[in-house]
Amino acid sequence: MAKHDKTELGLSTILNPVPVVMVSSAGKDGRPNIMTAAWAGTINSEPPMISVSIRKNRYSHKLISETGEFVVNLVSKSLCKACDYCGVRGGEKEDKFKSCSLTPVKATNLEYAYAIKEAPVSISCVVKDVLELGSHDMFIGEIKGITADSYLMDENGKLCLENARLVAYNHGEYYLLGEKLGFFGYSVAKEEIIKKRMGKDKKK
Image 1 (spheres, one colour):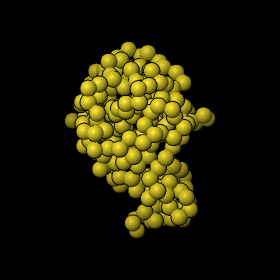
Image 2: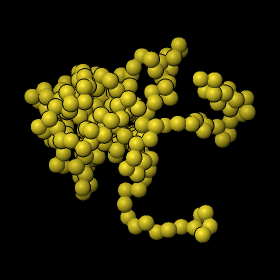
Image 3: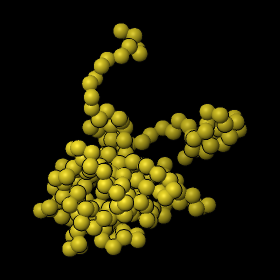
Image 4: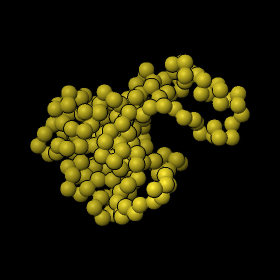
């Protein structure tokens, strides 16, 4: 069989890899919760918006529907085990912040939701729309605030996410992001630009 001969796989959610995130929220009673989501993505730039797709029977679905708020917390290597735990355990009867030794902090510019202090980046969102798609409802959130760990900022104030050791989800497994292969526009960039952008990272 040749390398690029094809095999039919049928229909499934095969798009991989995808970001894995920890979605934090709280009800109007103030009790915070965390769930894990692999179905999250950027959907608009002006205004900045992202989406998360959640099953109706999830506790977080109830909380986000109640308050219209959620926080998308990026997952670093050090959070990977907690991230997995929050994806397999329900939050209705368990305080997953406590179970995972994580710290809830009030999310930037939100009234109810909490962010995860230990997350390298937390993105505060207000629900603008909900699309009922079938097995999942897609919550479309407008970004209202972003916080990042100070160690991710360089001397010029640039956010260096490559230092966060972020995790991706690939067909049921977690992977640490690794080798940098290029940058946006590198296929048409001048050689000196490529050397500058790529060489700098190799010195780290």
